[in-house]
Image (cartoon, rainbow, N blue to C red; front, top):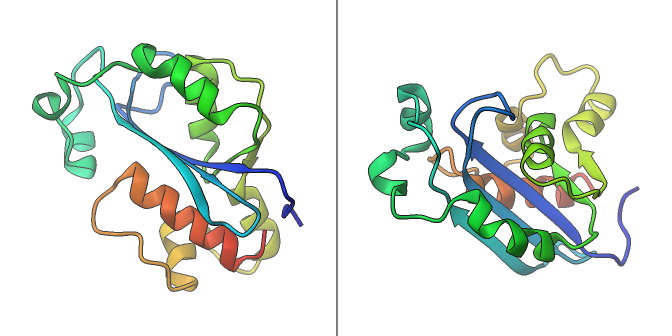
Amino acid sequence: MLKNSMAKIILDIETTGFNAEKDDIIELAALKVNKDYLVEETFYHLLKPKKSIPPKIQRMTNLNWQNLKSKKSFEDIKDEFVLFVSKCPIFIYSKLDERFIDAKCNLGNRFVDILDIVKERYRSMNNHKFFNMCKRFKINVGKEHSAMNHAIALCNLMEKMRL
């Protein structure tokens, strides 16, 4: 369905909250993959937030101010990120990721939310959460709530779904 010869970007982020205008991206992982889902390049950064990280987010991501205070901010890596994604379509598993990327840097890239495709293909399933889909396809997501682990798992999910 979506398979073609053009490179794809598979993206996942971790944030300090759910408000794309007020919260920060604290981890960004992007994989540039070819039509066979082989990773050709990666773009990965832990990022310094502008404000404190809520305790719930710290528990989920295992990231805190001590881990991130010496890292670059999103603004510091924005130009490099824009060059990395170029005009490739960006594949995500949550419109939240798209809202954050659009709020931080209006790319103009086409976003494809795999969750929409999953809901269409697997209508009989009650729960279309990322972890449930990975479990269904026997994909290891890793123990941490990590953008890189999730980007790799999403790449595997897309390959197994033959997208």
